[in-house]
Length: 400
Ligand SMILES: Cc1ncc(COP(=O)(O)O)c(C=O)c1O
Image (cartoon, rainbow, N blue to C red; front, side):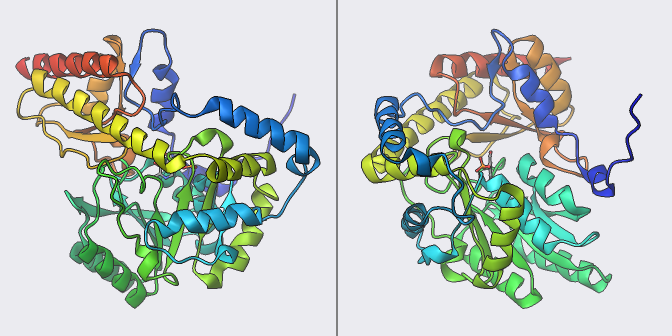
């Protein structure tokens, strides 16, 4: 019989993912899932992608299937800099490190920056995958307070100062300033400036995760914090939501001082990002009107969002509230007193609807009064049905 040694200490701080529990049910037959953050891929130009993949393999197969540069292919790094220019950033392609998804980029930053016990501050609530990544290094993770506009900077400053006064080392603030997941807030410009200033004053690395920045319903892009503070901000980008997650391609543009160490760290994880996927992504960006497709996707997501809201409005009591999203995938719903989102999730699943309870986005037990409803993937018909089922369920629960 095999006998294994104990797990490394840091594994103890991994949190069992509630999202994972939910996902296990999301694909059950007949279930309508409002749970995932999976983009709608039905309008991608699969025929053209197939032609491009075929040319890549025919013309440069031995490159495509070979090891390649640890930091990513030069052409794609230039294209990434061009994408970032849409949000006001002037980036040297030499500072771009391509990764296998931005999830890996976040973990790489933590590996480089965090010693056991160091504090990393995240928004409360915070994207569950981000929480898992920042917790991976025996980190002391704290939530900062948010309101309808996102992080409340005065309170964050007081929180940081109190932590420092108690002898804590605050290393990083991890923020999703544009279309926050799950709150779907957009941090206003003055708060962005104040956040950058705060991090600069206290010597804290600011991580700007911008997976959804190009998915604003009105097509307008918000100026990234990285644009005005390139040496304070480590920027995380991703092709997952603006294209599809299947190629597993994201990137990081850290302050220049950190480029070398992060490049080495990413290499220890993956040697190099997937070569074939990078060539495919690069051909797509060069050869297809991807911004035109994104415009159609934004309109589709807005329609889906409004369809879900209409169904909820038609069936929920007015004590259930939310802020209408300005982009991306998520409706962050506030429940009235007396309802518990985990309990509701179990009951909703019995009626054929699955969503993520708010508790999945906190590490400190908050979120029982919240649920995250994703409208990105289900059809409008499914969204109407799911919204109505949830509305009826909540109405019944409140009447008990
Ligand atoms: C805020 C945020 N960042 C990062 C990711 C993951 O990105 P990637 O697929 O590039 O790892 C997600 C996925 O849902 C997300 O919501």
